[in-house]
Image (cartoon, rainbow, N blue to C red; front, side, top):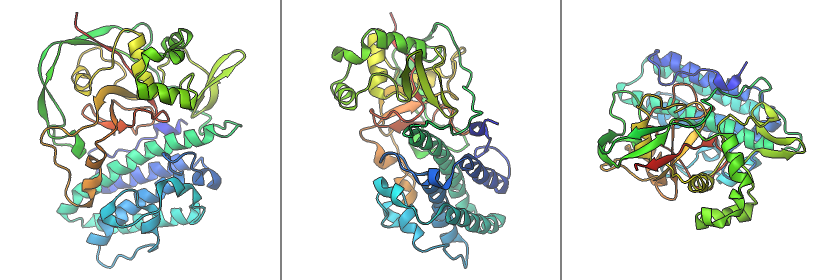
Length: 401
């Protein structure tokens, strides 16, 4: 069984009680292959332990839904608010993010009990849910799905630090992707609308829908492959400072980059550490685990550029646009900034996106670790330009002739 593809329908039309149960169960299914020791490890400050992800998503429902809306609800443990708050200043003080791996206690079984306690109370709340609380339940489900992806990327990074390179899921299979030379799709010049404009769920950073000008360009119908990346490496891509942004070249030199993250050189060729363990590199598969700096350098080497997030969203509706989601989040050339007229949500959840709109680049699409049905064309993911531990990829663009 490919655990990563276990479905959890946060955005489906199923009754909210069933959706809640499905999303919560998927988190537990993803954590099931992990030992208590696996669940506690934090391999770098940007990652979090699996146990923490399981507890934090539970804290979200407890803090923002149960305490304000369920009469007589009692916290599972008063101390957990400090341990499992992430970045919500309005919700009180919190344990430092780089030290989450020090939380050997509470043990994993206590987190399991915490989840069960909150799930039982949420079942009671959902039976008579106040209408004004429904959007917060939806946000909580979408939030948990985001942490499902982070749980996978974080544990992959943690397992990659183990010299045994153990598999998370030995039965995991590489997702199918378009292969062969890229074909470039024409994106005509003109005014286009981007952003979320439908009736379904969207994060606040996807709004408001608005008009933007698209300069005529062409965008690749598929992602850059490992074979393409090997050619970049063979041509000295990691040794040519003229291809790189200054900060990117400094990061490349300081961190010793010579290949994408999770690539391993062996006598008989390159191997890649995957959720299924260490496997021979599949040349035809899309490259992943690259930073924005690497993606931009590759595009420059190829005589192309990265698409803007506006170009990507418009192009995603074109016939022949392949692998928009399900393989890797795709770096764009757009800084993560608010849309014209952006307004964050009210209350503590207003901290969800807006305060991070600095020093980040936008990725579009969705990855092999993104829960099925979670992403949409207007979805704006974002990470610092040096981030490599996500399932990040790229497709190329070029200006119209």
